[in-house]
Amino acid sequence: MRILFRVDSSSAIGTGHVMRCLALARMLKEAGCAVYFAMRVGPGDLCDEVENKGFPVFRLVYEGPVVQEVDAKWTIEVIRQLLQPLDWCIVDHYELDRRWEEKVKAYVGHVMVMDDLANRPHQCDILLDQNYYQQAQQRYHGLVPPGCRLLLGPQYMLLRPEFYEAKKFVSLRSGQVQRILLFFGGSDPTNETEKALHAFRELDALDVEVDVVVGKANLNRFRVEQFCREIGFRYHCQIDYLAELMAKADFSLGAGGASMWERCFLGLPSAVTIVAENQRRSTEDAAAYGAVWNIGWHADVKSADYADIVYRAIASREQLKHMSRKALELVGSTKASIVHPVVEALLEG
Image (cartoon, rainbow, N blue to C red; front, side):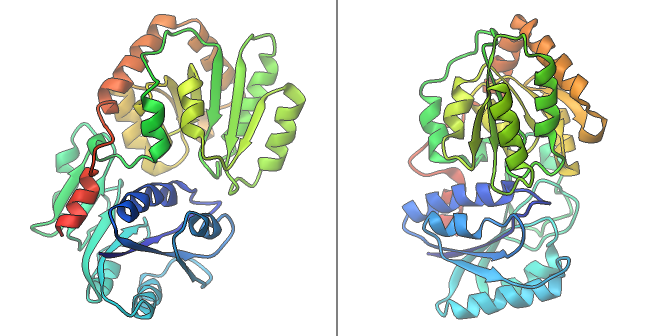
């Protein structure tokens, strides 16, 4: 089976789309599939990272905002360059919808969409939304064609192998805070990391260890590194052992999105800042379930708020134990099976 991923990353949109596509790509490659990527080039792209993981990348070079007709033309040209027919095109992109999918579908066997906005129509055979929502089954009503297979909920979560490995050593947290993880996504476009670091500077009397994680797409990473050096925090950039840090941490400050579900999977209590509109609904629903604390919209969150939430965490042992339990309950049943359910759906065609 031959599969093409159409996905982007940048300093503006973050790296989450590419990272979840990479997780699925690894599983498909292990299942014997030939996997390719088509990605736009620009500040914060992960083209080299994807190639370093062993996947050919076709670089799309055009400037300005994404225009569906132009993007479809470039993607179809990539498909033609592959010469042999493609079984699937998997698209994970908020700027593309049914208009793009209809054009590309004429050149591939099937189209799968990865989405979590439920705000535009699609022309696809499978739609995957791995997030938890209180009314998940109703969100895509009228947005997908009849016969489209919906894969909805955390049971379809795409996790890298290291998360399943880390899961083996994770248990319910005790609620005692001795180690804190800061990770606001690979690019952290709203620079929450520095906000939180300023808060910790005011909390220097606290006896806790702190790990700070950033990606190469983070435009402030060098300043963050210097900040960590000054206050004695461990700095990590573009790592492949994030699951290990999550497993060791007692509490975390982070963004919504894919990393929120990774924390939940490992039972890590966390306070979540909504840094993009597409994270709002899932963060609010996860907080209502009791799996996270919702700090709110990033523009309303100040350094003092991060300081307050750390104090709250340290003083709330029973609440953190409850949060850890609810997080594991929400997504912790996901297991590494012989064939991931998303891979199984793609192989079934």
